[in-house]
Length: 212
Image 1 (tube, rainbow, N blue to C red):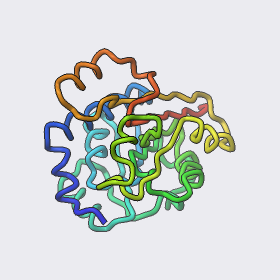
Image 2 (tube, rainbow, N blue to C red):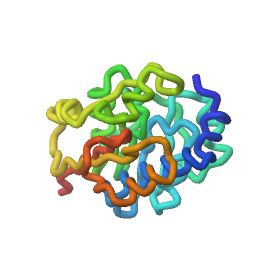
Image 3 (tube, helix red, strand yellow):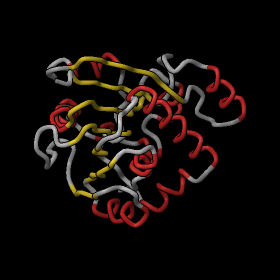
Image 4 (cartoon, rainbow, N blue to C red):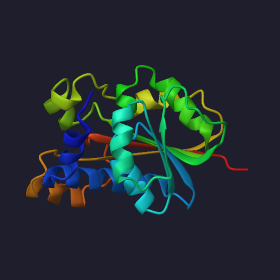
């Protein structure tokens, strides 16, 4: 279990803040959400829940860790904080406009089941942030530190998860954090690199629904 104080402190470092900003920018560019509700699954300390809320979405944060939820609630702008697991979401079908899972499915043993749940409770679409196997970050960090125990995914793997889902109207992907050091050269490369390049350490996947 991560210490929520230490986990959140990483986002306050120059490198952590830069990485989080690039990840969130990619997810918003892929999802392009309309105003509405969003369930943030595996919200952790609520860092991205707060970012989605600041972008105008009505956010509910869900996490399997009561300690993380307490930490998030103390700092939060989300509309609710729910204890629960991605594989069994405690909500009826189409309860939210959108669902997100930002580097949380990487620690779920059955991501297909979790994605099916996100899809079930969303009306418009789902945005995922995953760890990209085809990246320099994987080569540097896989199995180490905070990445120990995490699964590193590929676009092809996600396509297999998506195949059984009904009503998928669009499948969008992109990546961020090509050079994870966060120094001036890394940031310069990130500014000019197209988001469609598949080699960034952070893999964004957006699934949109046929909306009747």
